[in-house]
Amino acid sequence: MEATFIAGAEDTHHLLEGAGHTAQDGMGKSAEAVEKAAKEAKHQVELVMPAIILVVWTASAVALTYHTKWTLSSHGAAFTFPVFYTFITTATIFLGCATIMIIQKKTNTVGFTQFREQWKGILGVAVLSVLAVASSDASMMYIGITLNQLLKACTPFPTMLFGMCIERKTFAWPMMLAVLMIVVGAGLAVPMDDATGSTYGLVMAGLSTLFAACKISLAARLMSDSANNGLTPLILLFYSSLASVPVLLIWFLAIDERSEVPEYIAENPGLAFVVLFLASIYAFLVNLLGNTLTKITSALTMTIAGAGRQIGIIFVTGVFIEHTFSSALNWIGLVIFVSAIVSYAYMSFNAKLKAKSKPFHIGGQAKVGAAAAKFKKTSATEKTPLNA
Image (cartoon, rainbow, N blue to C red; front, side, top):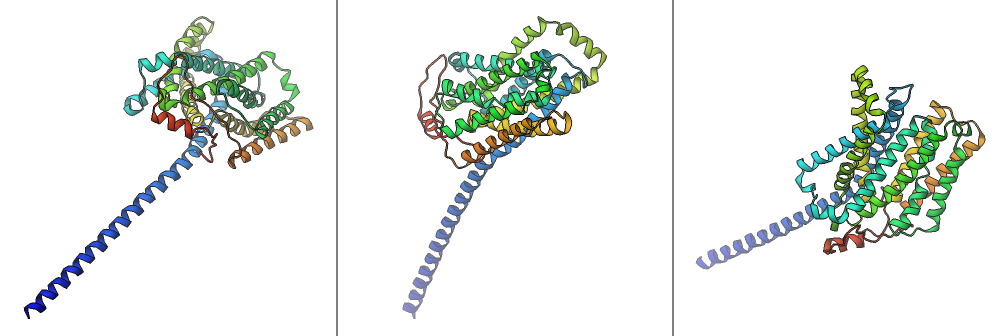
């Protein structure tokens, strides 16, 4: 009987031991499943986030375009002070970046060594940003939105050229052909009646296109080595806005706007506040999200995305608001322009085009750590908002 009891106890022990192993195996598999699900969720977020940023950036850019035209137009708010307008939006961008860095301290990588090594590139981005925005705003006072956007839609062409020179990229011939057709289509779509309306407005819009293209490529080059130099989109925007504020302030004080702006604000304080507040919000979102998209995709893809946004603005404004397309040639140009954008998007989506960029240091050479080496390896292929 004792032997039977001992045998039964041993069987019970083995049974409990087996149940314990089974439970542990189940918990192990459950943990693996949870970890796998977490990785998959993270991957999905990484895929979707660029698209979300692109949508918000596009909406903000469209709102800023129409708001700026209404603000600076004599038929709108008649706030005809482009330099002060740019100064206020740039100062707001600087304060917004500083606030984010204070609230989320881990985003703050600002340092004296960083600025000393990269000050030339930072100053270059700041000056180009000021010139691009100020010249674009000035053109809005003399030409319509349709013509302004058609000229700015040619930005991918100089961006590609600057990308070759500044970022040391190479592009496959289908991409170059698509960009060339964008320019050709935009040129044919320009309504000649509007084009002869204001030479000054055309020159300002053209200069804005060149400045913006160069700025995008230089910013992309600086941020391509952010793992090493710490120039994330937020930090670069902070530096460039900080450097732009005194330049714009001096510019404002040196021209007639210094006496005209106080008079306008005294007569229309509420309107002036609304105009500048909305412009500041839109500009902050456009610049921060624009820098972020430039980093997670590429400079050329960023300008193509901007051109895609301009398709909608050009079509809606030119057809339904300003009624600027008056000839068959304009419509042929629009078809070519849209087809070129779609062709590029198709090629990018299928990952057939790869643009390579080397790490870049302006004004200083730093050690490249393991993180930087890893970043260089993974950033060689151009991405798009759909496959980033």
